[in-house]
Length: 97
Image (spheres, rainbow, N blue to C red):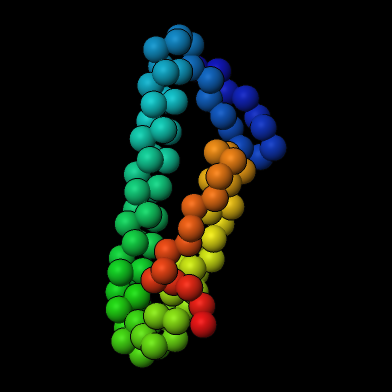
């Protein structure tokens, strides 16, 4: 192994390709494990927080979700009109008063 001084840290450069590949593979495995741990932690926090927030603010969340669905239906209708050249009637379920 060759040792190179980079900054104040020694980096070792392996002699053959197989050892280079094994170092790269090890680093990829470490990155994957860190990613999965972070993803698992974030998912756990979300799954624990969402029911509590919905229980406390359910009425407001329902109103916002219905409004978002209404807007998405209109955006979808506009997209279909641009793509296919014809408009689809909006769903009667979400028409505003």
